[in-house]
Image (cartoon, rainbow, N blue to C red):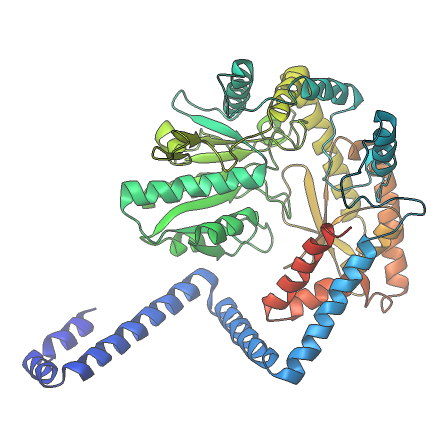
Length: 547
């Protein structure tokens, strides 16, 4: 710095002032250009500091190549050709999803005459049995977090008792208000909340994450005067953080992870924090690989930079808090970690509650209030709601409460022991297959794995699908994962047997898997213009609503 200071001191500021006075317009343009160059240089330096030179250059190339492709798509001929390919991909998705069943009626308008109870139930039973994958026998990775038939009967009865209730009206349903408050307090106790800690229920992990981001954005604006907030997350953090950033139009920086452990690079994350950062994120455990970030180190970073720190334990939920007691290595992922300001936990995963329940927790009530929406000037009266929804379904809250009371700590402990033991069993079996290797260091219920040449991992995915299994594909790096549930425990031996057979089949014919999953994910990773992949993904969502 002495050289730079000396250069500044040597500037003839009188000549600069004289030039500015004679040429104000040119001086303004020069200053604007200098500001732009300094700003872009600062961004480039920061990007290199976070990602490293090699990765930063790769991201730059992808951005430039994507821009070229988007420009080419505007040309009539080339654009039409690309669009035809996109339309074909979307059509293939629709055709695979829409299978007309012989004799099955499509209901596209309300019937002129009411159906009888028996007629309604007959249609529902037929559609209930349209199972693509035999999830009841544990052949689906994650997706269904079933607590057993007896628990299902109890939660269904609780659901029916409260099916018309609405937490928006506590004066009408005071008992429901108590149930919801107790659910939150029980989860806070599970995550070692202090008396100052608090929370709310939400409709699921995505809403819990979105609410946590909103709370920190509002806190940053009110308490710190941050008008252009951003958040910093590992690349393995749940996509709901990206959704929140898009919804709230805030910045988001994705930080790389250690390729061996799949845990976030804490030093890189620290370099990504700036004066506008309101929140950093760690996972316990990550959706892709079941790894747990170094939460204690992230908490220390949050305290150092005076920013919020959210632990996403939606997937870890009722597994992580019981690891030590179940005989596995402990992962501290709760309010005992200094610096933690919020935690999300899905009760509808390993809490075995019906889908549609999660809890977002805060270190204090001030932060929780930053989540709320209130308006006092509406002609309809003073309006206040804790989450995105106004009216909500009270039935899922009652069923969640029933599940937690029926399971008890001893029940959750036993399920943690069985489910994590199942993951370890599958992991060890994968490690014995020479063509496969584990991705990351799993710590909970999820194990991810990839393959070595000549075995295509997406070929393995297709072969497992042909054998009746639904595994989850991953990318960057290309891999698959198994999210073990209560149902997986009884199916583990079958999965291991079929996985060995699938690998052997792909190895015997390595060139036979250029289509199917390989074509989809190979295309997604090779195309620099992500908007093309986004368009195909939007076509998939459209297909969900076609009759």
